[in-house]
Each structure stands twice: as structure tokens, then as C-alpha cells.
Image (cartoon, rainbow, N blue to C red):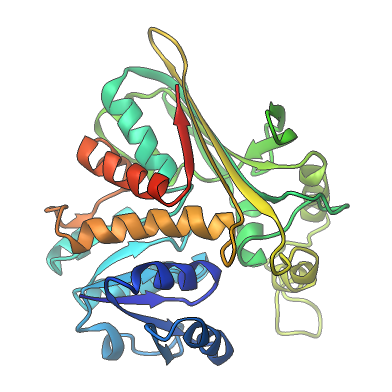
Length: 368
């Protein structure tokens, strides 16, 4: 079977290498240097240098069984529409600002299955939350997640495991949460709190817009009165970012005399400061806390560290996407349309499949 990975960055290239032993994999990207590196690392993967923003993707993926959309969020929705138009099913990790559920009818018309937000958070978090809610009456769920370097590097104490422009999007996109049964919108970076994690130390957490489709899901998930998602960083990072926001550094206004926005300019400036060095030790940590109507709190922790050749964020995000991809290609999911990870998590077979896939590859997942 044939898989087209759209976007050959850190996570896209990891997904391609993870799947290429069992499937025919092609990576599509507009950066020739990126594609050359992928080909050099693994001769099993074919590549195509292609304008992913303006090119006609139908000419490339029409005969493929699955596409994995790994583009940055601002390009994700338009690419997903094009993939569906090709009548190709898709696993999507692009973190698009648009509501992907709007494409469900379109996917049904084209006999496609789309699994959106199929990374670690959103993605794995949604799958786990779906399973928790399917088996318990829940009053509140909080998710806290982040990827960080093991060694702090003042002043930011942060390294971006993916494009800084997508990190900035997390910091600036208003956060939708649910309080007492009502969806509310709060500023990203608000509701800051501290937490102590054994083996890691003190961290801070603040609201970001990671709940996404969880807020639109029907059935038992719609009955959970309180839902929130927080991003985790080392203490002090949030205040630095708040200052940049207030100074207009992340504005979409054009820079005087230049054809770029202030957000794009800032992203370029942060690229070097936030760049993970080759072989730099880092980790990804996620905590899910669910408060049931009766009984003890339900907790999940997910943890992974850098291993030779792959960051923990590439592994946790990429392996989750690969597990979903295999579910699609093995024809285990019979439905078509946009099927969200939380819906799949309500099925114990799919839930166990994904968690076992990650555990078999060294991701630490514990629950109590």
C-alpha cells in the first residue's frame, strides 16, 4: 500500500521512516535540501520536490491509499481539502486553526476517512480522554503537556521541537475551554499555575487552545462540564512570552519596509535561540487528570526522551500518527468522514491498539 507524507520536516520525516518498512512511502516537500537528507538516511523512501502551497497535489497523490498531512497549521486546512478532493483518506497532524469537522460531509461524499489532530496533544490526549469518558461519568478533565530540553537555557529555558511559527500560534491563538458546561474563550498564556513533577522538577502551565474537537464532540464528552488544556514550560517562560505579545512582537501587521509580518520576523529571530541542537537531550511529558462524579481521580502520564536519531516530540507525535495510519490501512475503521481521536478512543480495540503501539516502541504510559 502507498502512503504520501505531505511535509518532510522533523515529524514528517520520522513518520516516513517509521512506516517505510511495511509500506511504499513518498515524502512531498518544497525544500530540496530536506528531501535530500531524507533520501540519504533511508533509500526506501521516495521524494518529490513540490510546491505544497500552490501546486496541484492531485497529480501526485491520486493513486495513493493514504496521505499524512504534516504541514504547518496555516497551510493544513487547504491541503486537507485538496487531499479529500483526490478521494484519498488522511491522517492529519497540521494543527490547523480552522474547524476540521466542517469537512466531514465533504469527506463522506468522497468516500474518505479523515483522522484530524492525530499527534500527541491533540491526538493521543483525545484518544485517552475519549476512553476515560466512555467508562466513567466525569466532572472535570485537565490536560497538561509540553516538550522541553533537559538542560535549561536562559532566558527562554525552551527549545522548539518543531517550527517556531507553530509554537507562536499556540501562544497567540485564543484558548477555548469549557467551564460549568459552557464553552468560553480565554487568552492564551492565562491561568498560569505551578506544578512539581517527580524526576523533572518545578514546571509552569498555562492555557492554550488544545481541546479543539473535544469541545464539539457529541454524546458523553458533551456532558463533561469542565475541560481545560495547558501547555507546560519551565518557570519564567510564560512571562517572557506575555511581554512579547504586549509589545506586538507576534502581530500580523507588516513590518515597515518589509514584506513580512512582525510575527514572521519574530519567528525568524527566535529560530536560532529555540533550535534544538543535534543530539540535544530533551523530553516530552503529558499529564491527564480526570475527576469523576464518584470515586478517585483518574490520572495518566506519558513520558518520552530523546533517542538516537529522533526527538521525543517527533516520537510521541509521529508514533501516534503512525498508529492511526495503520488502523486506516488495515481497514479496521469502517466509517468514513471526519472521525476524531476521542471517538476512536471510545472503542477499546482502537484505544488498546494505539497505546500498545506506542508502548511497544518505548513510550512510557502509566495510569492509576
